[in-house]
Image (cartoon, rainbow, N blue to C red; front, side):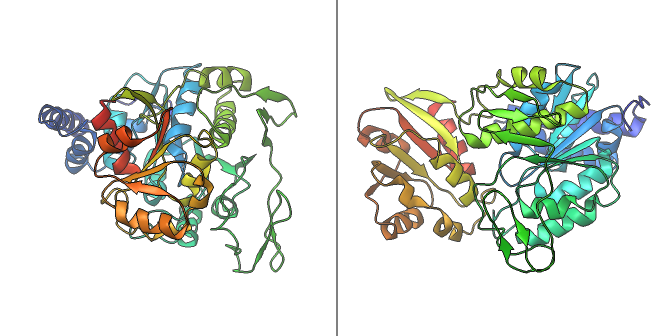
Length: 412
C-alpha cells in the first residue's frame, strides 16, 4: 500500500537486477528498449515483484481502447506538480513492461501506469491502485481481444470491491457498466464520438436510446449517470461548476477529453484543475504521435489510428483537402491479424484528399477505399508515397506497427 516503504526482499532485488541486465543486453543488440524482456526475466524470478515495486507508490491505472497512452502522459505531467512520478510512458502496458517501468521508480511518489485492457483486473489486484481511469471500450484487435461486452464484464467483476477511486467516462455505456460495480466512482462527461459498439444495453441486451448526449435503456432502466466533471468545448467544468480552460499542444477533441479525465484524476490527489491543466500544456507529442517531421524535403505529421474509433477521431483533426494523406496498415501480432475492422472505418470522410496507400496490408486497404469510391494510389514504400504527394504538409495515418515502421524510416 502507498506509504509503506518496506525495503525489497533479497529475491525482489535480485529479480530487479537481472531484469535490468536483460534489458541492457536487449538494447545493446538493437532489439528496442528492452523493457518487455527485462520485465519478463524479473517476473520469472519473483512473480510477486509488481506488488512489491508498487508498495510505496500512490498508483493510477489507465485503461481504454483509445487514448490510454496520451492520458497516462497527461496525468503524469499533472501529478508532477506535487511529487516525482514513475510511468510506462512508452506504452509497454502488459505486466512485464509495467514491472520494468516501476523498477526504475524507487524515489517516486506516484506511479502512473497504462494497462492493456486484458490485464487491468490482474494488475489492479497486484498494485492496489488509488485511482483507476477508464476512458472507453470499442472493437480492437478482433483476433486477440474479447468482444467488448465480454471485456466490460471482466472489468466489472475484477473491479468489484476495489477500494480505488474509479474515474470513468459516463458517455460510454460499456464503461459505465464496467465501473458501476465499484463503491467510489467519479463520472466524467468526456464524450463518445464512436457509438457503434454501444447500441445494445450491456446490462440486459435491450436497444439503447440515445437522445442528444444522453443515453438509456428503455427496457431495464440502465442509464447515463450524472457527471461531476464535464468537457464543454475548450473548458472542463469541475464539480463546483467552475470552468477551466484547456490549452493543449496536442490536437483534436479526443485530447481535450483525455485532459478532462486527467484533471479529474489529478484532483483526487489534491492537484487543482488550473495547475493540472497548465502542466498538460507541456506535452507536445506522445511516443511520436502528432510529431511533425521533415523527410525527403517534406513535412509529415505522424498520426496513430488503430481501430475504427481511433480513425474517426483522427479524421476530425487532419487539415482539409487538398492536403495529401498517406495511409499505412499492417496486421502483425501487435496490430491484430484480422483486418475486417477496415470495413467499419468511415473512409468516405477522406473524399477530396489525394490518398497514398502503403504498409503490409495495402491491398486490403485499397479494396476498402475502392468500395468507398475514393481516388487513391498504392505505393511500395513511404519514400515513393512522399515523392508522389502533391505540395503541402502531408498527413500520415498509420496503425500500430506501421506507425513504428514509419518512425524508424524518418528517424523519429
